Length: 287
Ligand code: G3H
Ligand code: 13P
Ligand code: ZN
Image (cartoon, rainbow, N blue to C red):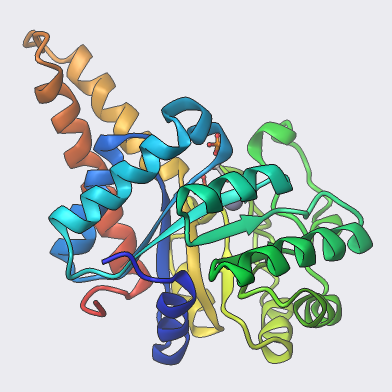
């Protein structure tokens, strides 16, 4: 059942667990996420970037997700979200299509401009019953850096500013930067846990952590214990898909040309990777 992201994450905050927000680009990935959530009885968020809207068609990918959820997992709460919305026009288009949650990413703008633009998006979206995620501080991308040293201080969310940001914009959820990064990146060796604790004590809305593909080995669990309620995962899912294709085409036996068999294997691999993350985030059994 398509459910508001605010409601899904509100319950996660009350229950002390986190929900995965998984990026999709196509039918196979979408079905894998829906099946993983169904098998584990877990709420989930399925999200799409502007690039995917261009690739698949915004209305088409929206309807693939919606139909998949309504047909295959009507009992599972699923949020549909636009990830990293970069401008007002994209947000308007997404809302017009039917998305019920959007992120406006003003994290590369000055603080004043980020507040002003995010508030404009919130005013527009709330009037239409659509939830909004904002970002403060910013979460670097692998592609922005050679794998050298990163001046993490430049990226971090300032806790006092976070409080001001939430109050001034009226956002429903906040994406924070505490040493996390997009892609399989050399992240800050130890996340800035003190900063996370301070942010959590100063704001009331659910906290989202982007770049969670490589948050393993106790990091995700610790972040949840400290108040993170949503993790964005993309790279992990894409790699599961692509690695499966690669294995199929380098295997001894001829894979043939039945694309359903080839893509079906990739779908299974994505499903397993999503199930692993759902268990890590502790949302299994919460649907
Ligand atoms: O943070 C978002 C994604 O990992 C980037 O995805 O290539 O669809 O823009 P994209
Ligand atoms: P990863 O690709 O590092 O999992 O990050 C995903 C993300 O933050 C999408 O918004
Ligand atoms: Zn992100």
